[in-house]
Length: 408
Image 1 (cartoon, rainbow, N blue to C red):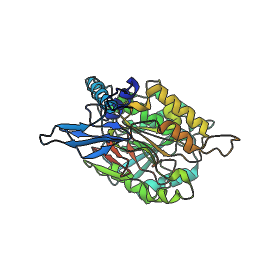
Image 2 (image 1 turned 120 degrees about the vertical axis):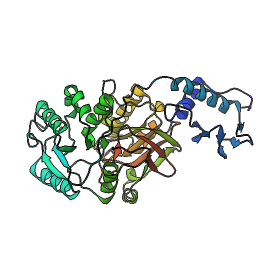
Image 3 (image 1 turned 90 degrees about the horizontal axis):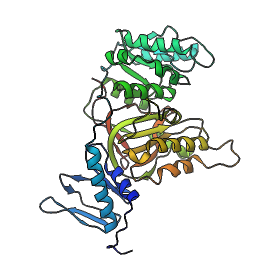
Image 4 (image 1 turned 90 degrees about the vertical axis):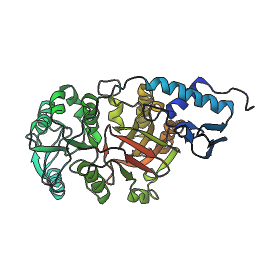
C-alpha cells in the first residue's frame, strides 16, 4: 500500500482516540502499532514506532515522517479526545478517609459469606499484629444459609461501623457471596459523613464499586482480615493505608514471578506495551460483570481497569469479559490489567480453551496498554489498590504508581 493512500477507518481512528485519551482531560498519548507516542508541550521524545519516526524540532514543534494511515489515526485521536475532554466527568469528587495510626480500632465484620471461629481468631491476630485494636460486629458469627446472617443483619453491622466514631477502619473477614444484596440498602449519607478505610477483595468488590460510585469515598482493594499476610502484602497495604505520600510505586511480587515456572498464570504477559494514567477501578471479574448496567457499575471510561477471579472455568471468564466489553467497552479504558486468576483452567472441561488463550481473545486486540499476571487477586502476595485514585501503569517497568495519597 502506498504511503499516500488514506487507509484509516473510523474504527481505527476511534481506537487511536481511546488509546490517546488516558486521563480524560487531554491527549497525553496516542497508541500506534502497539506503542504510545506521548507529546509534552508539543514535543515528542525520540523513538520509532511502527515505521513512524518521531522527534522534536528546534522550536519544540512536532515533526513526523508518517504515512497517511498513521496520520489519520492520530488526527482522529486528537479530534475525538478534545471533544470528549470538554464533557464533564460523572465521577463524584473523591473523599479520602483519614490515615490509620497505631492503636486505631478496626471493625471486623462479615458482609458476605459466613465465617467460623478459626477464621475470626486468625483475623484478630492479623489486626493486632499490625498494631490495631479489634471491634467485632454484633452479627459477625451469624449464619443464614451460606451468608453471614440476613442481609439486614449484615447491613446493620456495616452501618454500625461507619457510624461508630471509635472505629477508624472496616475490615471484612472474608468475601464469599452476598454483598450485592446490601447495595440497595446502603445509607449513602451516613457513609459520606463518616469516611473511613474499607478494605477487602473478592465479593467485597460490590461494596467498593457501589461506595466509590455513589459517594466518592476511596476504598481499598486488598487483603481481607483473615488473609495470610505475606511481607509483600503487608508492606504495600500499610504503606497505602498509613503513610500518605504524593506518589507511591507498587512493583509486582517477585514471589509470584518465581511461581510462574510451575504455574504459568503467575507469569506477567504484556499484550500491548505502554504507559497510561487514570483512576483505578475494578475488582473481582464476576462481580464487576454482575453490576454492569446498574447504578453501582464500575466507571470504566478512562480508568486503569483491573480484574481478577478464582475457581472459574475459561468459558465463564470469556462470558464475563465479553459482557463487560459490551457494556462499557474495554477500549474506553486507559488500560486493562488482569491479575492472577487462580484455578481458572479447564481442568474439568472435555474441550476448552486455556485461561491464557481466553484472556488473549480479549486483551490482544486492544491498543490501550493491556497486561495479565499482575499481583492482584485471590493470592497471598497481593498489592492494595485504592479505588478511584489516579495512578500510572507502566508495562515495561511492570509497576503501578499512585499519583496521589489515598488517605488524608
